Amino acid sequence: MNKLYLYNSLSRKKEEFLPIKTSPQPSPSAGEGVSVGLYTCGPTVYNFAHIGNLRTYIFEDVLKRTLRFNGYKVKHVMNITDVGHLTGDMDMGEDKLEKGAKREGKTAWEVAKFYEQAFLADLEKLNIIMPEFTPRATEYIKEQIALVKTLEEKGFTYKTSDGIYFDTAKFPDYNKLSHLDLETLREGARVEKNDEKKNPTDFALWKFSPAGAKRDMEWDSPWGIGFPGWHIECSAMSQALLGEELDIHCGGIDHINVHHTNEIAQSESATGKKFFNFWMHCAFLNVAGGKKMAKSAENFLTLENALIKKNINPLVYRFACLQTHYRKPMEYSEEAMENAQNGLEHLYNQARNLSSVALEVGKVDKEIFLNSNVYRNFVLAINDDLNTPEALAVVQEMLKSDMDANFKLFALLKFDKVLGLGLGNINSESLPPEVFDLVEARKIARQNKEWEESDHLREEIEALGYAVEDGKGEMRVYKK
Image 1: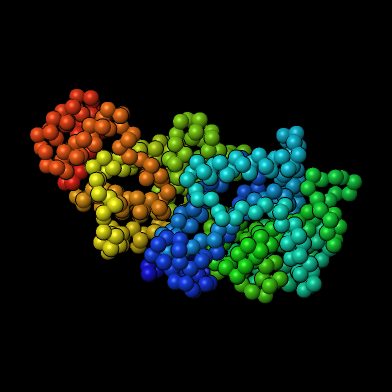
Image 2: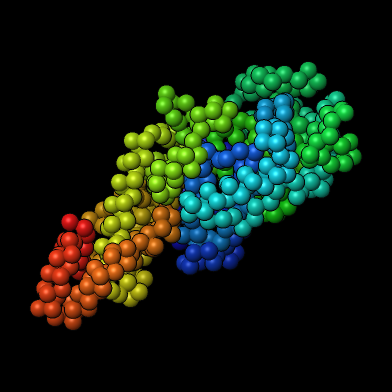
């Protein structure tokens, strides 16, 4: 069993990943071994996801694929925030869904449904494996109310004129994820001042509906009509769906100081147990000037306007993300996308060339593959905190080598289980039918050592405007 090391934001260091469950043992067949619980913070569905958001979901997909590559069965939960996320993260301002409803002249329910579907479509375009569970916050109101009641019974809450709040002074380890001193956190919380809070870092568990106003989304509770705070949904849903399998929790780095810090405080106060062993966070996508991409800054690009409208394959963006480690800031520019587009097309061409000559991919000995240096180097890269740039380098080094074409294609398709670039869908059938038929005929001729026929077919292929290059076990065919 290969060791997998992941950077844990909680300890601020790489740690060997060991799942909470230890039986059955991880299986060599991906997704058939011990179960791992993975929770990833999903979108607030009041607008389109921007490509900075989508970088985080690509990172989480690579993590999931890597876990499966290492033989684990992943139980993945991603929430859909369709209520409770206010325009100010410190529980001030307007509910983002209500604001979106006013903007578009729809109900909050209609806005949530539209942008949820748009988000899931983006994930599909990026070849992201869908989570096993995508619960909506509005579907878990009872569980959220029950969790708030538990906190109330244990003395962690107090009431103000606008809601029920968590008293952070009663949770001594409040800064254990942020690693910031409490005064720094308090200063950040004062940006949105609420004089009724006991402490600036206290946060809402349940918000009351405004007096004299009827919200689209509101529910009865023991404290009055209202709606849940933003943070409580993730605690309630992860506990309801993952139970004791609280292995890994992911999100963007902007979630560390507030959202994830508050999740830990309320969850551990309610259960008396540790809330998730690993916390992993993706760095920002920056635009010109080093500014992070954000809806609030109105500098955000969607998958549609950044790539699709320009006839760029969305997987170009996935490939670009893989070229930068997830914990490093990534710079977006049209030049960077153009370079990524060229790089991905080159990789696709390499896959096409291999598929045109690799006649016995299914006969590659799996044990030889698993004991090869190529496999070992790929695993060392990807198991070193998802080092995708190094993993891509291993792939390119293999493709440039004189290894057998069958082995190279077999390895490439196995590695793409992690990379998710759709290389299994790229084959020589992308050639025009008349060229493809000649290439297939020439493969058979070469296999049967019919060299005269092979030369004749080569001339026919070249007459159609395609170059043919024969190497060790390979035949490359490409447009002149």
